[in-house]
Image 1 (spheres, rainbow, N blue to C red):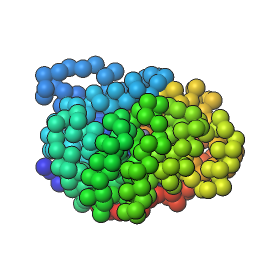
Image 2: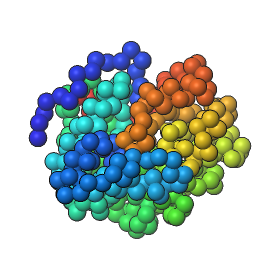
Image 3: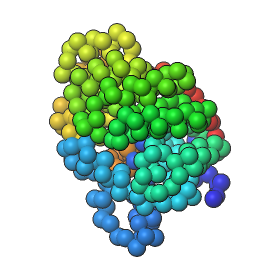
Length: 319
Ligand SMILES: [Zn+2]
């Protein structure tokens, strides 16, 4: 393991924070190809990078494909360090990476607790001018009993996490059944964000808010189909983590020009601009801000940028 800095970027004059960035979706395509070659595979770029898939599950499959080749703890240490360096290179001064030990373990056969130890060790002392927080993900695709076990594991490492998240097949696994798992996080004092309103409609966001008590919602863009929900999100100050490019690729938004961002902002819903999976979506946060500027104008984008820092779970792990 090398401890040499991978980036020499100086702090940005226009600081950005990304609150919704999956570590597993931040694996550099070059790294994924190198790891695939090590396993004797030569997958095409389309295995790792999304086009307009138009649906969440084929989009998530791209993340599976890259993660499957990262079969050693050293791989995950390197992937984490590269992801931090890439965030820094794009001008971010803070980032909250989220990852699912259960997902990584299932794809690679690695021990989930060892994955947590490796990722947290890579984040500690990264040596770059960026604050890095880690969010532990519970995967919904194995049902509520597994979710509770996943949450208990995350909570054993709670001192190294800034929050928890629920991710995976939103349409196939409705949110309410995960209430017991998120009750554990609440009791432990860890704030929550929940993927909702991406592959399912406003009812999914309502249920997340009612049953899981999140202070942020991953995406939530389909909230704009229910004006009462928009009012509720605005009144309760729940932040939507919006990732325009990803939303178009997964079909959560019809196309970029008709993305829900303008409607959300017009309804005074707090919004933070995010990338979701920069490698899979082939984007950067600075590019997402450029896109947002076209949609809602520079003044609103500046408000969104500042709000990202307000909505962070906690500053931690400065390198
Ligand atoms: Zn996500």
